[in-house]
Image 1 (cartoon, rainbow, N blue to C red):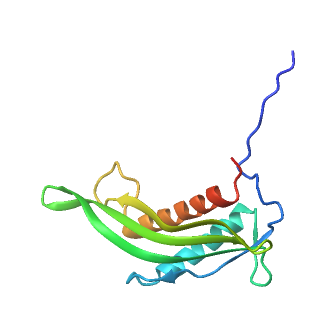
Image 2 (cartoon, one colour):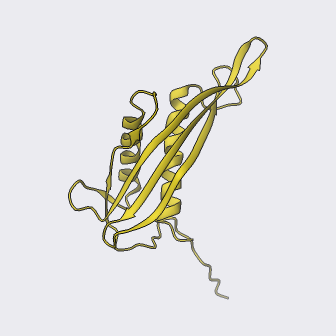
Length: 152
């Protein structure tokens, strides 16, 4: 008896003609200093390690550009008289463009991502505002990939 199964790969692409990408530095419209550099560096790192698209500066097949529209770090809960949990939220506008066909593959002008962190709650893995920011940028990469390159 022969068994057959369908396999699924997260590395499939509905756009096989896209081989290279350029990532423009996001415009930072917040007062959060250097957040645009963190976004650029982390996205570049994630695309490099992902391997589906090579990062180039000259003649890319596609382009990611965006803005950081809003940033907040709010108290979420208290433990007695001290803050127990915080919630970091970043509002992005992101566009992924196929430059070969001159068309937008995916765009979201109000992408809100958030993460909770705590300096005292052992049940929360993120322990700092910076770690919450980095997790949000990781999530931003995942959202971009899921909505642009991956076929479902």
